[in-house]
Image 1 (cartoon, rainbow, N blue to C red):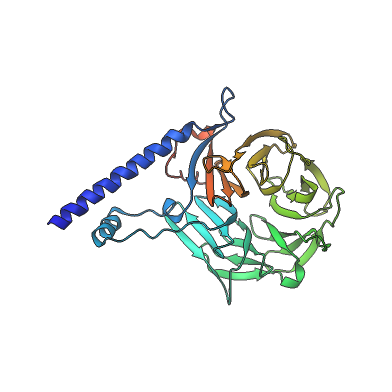
Image 2: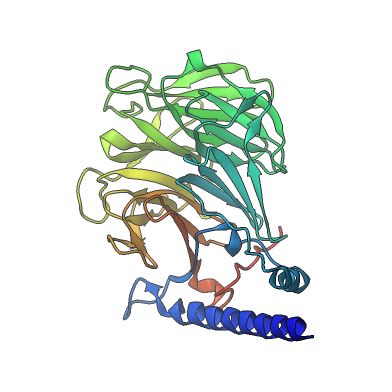
Length: 362
């Protein structure tokens, strides 16, 4: 009887602490971008650092764990590099963990993906998901695109190591019919271009761009993404710009940014994504923020600042980012091994302050 009473007390204390944690997170909803007196556009929502922020533990499992004196099995995200968000799921590439993580907020679970057929995931970089849930991942060590089903089961691969020097960026059409891979190349390489593949057969179709600084040329191209109007937004990192490219002809339609340390400029551009309106989000590893441009190339605002102290909106080594269907921004920082979540003001100030709200079903 004494052990049961002790367990009940421990359970009550755990629930009380959980309630306090929830309240603490709600209070930071006052972190807003841009700051007052400007009209709020985004609120800080939460920070995700480990599997325990995703996995839901039932009261029965919690009671059982307390009775048996067991610790909860949770693990951190290692060194996250890139991510994508789709219908309540976050897909995360973890380079030091040599794995892909599916953070399923709909069902409160985390799926680890390590096996790719007869091979193991070695160095996952860019990651994208199609409308039918297939997961495409660039592996920088295997030098190919790995394709998994919605549950992380390996299906096939695209490309061969001979085709790439340093594959890093990835874009996939919603139906999976076309796959675009940016080869970052290197100092001694001329493969600073984008290779285009048939997403079903894996056939190499053609290449876009060449090494250089002219429109349609690239110098260390990294992350890429398809815009809603069908253009390819390319992080042309060593030219300190984002180029909007026609994916059929390779011609530059528009260019965003230039070298510099001011807003609207780039110092070390990394992650890139777009929202449903065609606005372009670019994370900068040196500036420690994400800058938001409209599709005409005009700077709208920025979120975050460079800091050696971890905290909401503080970044020392930001990397990939993602924007979901409802406009939430998910920002990776590799140094702090975290994902910061920012909610658009249109969803309300406190909605989902603790648990990530599910996106609207289409």
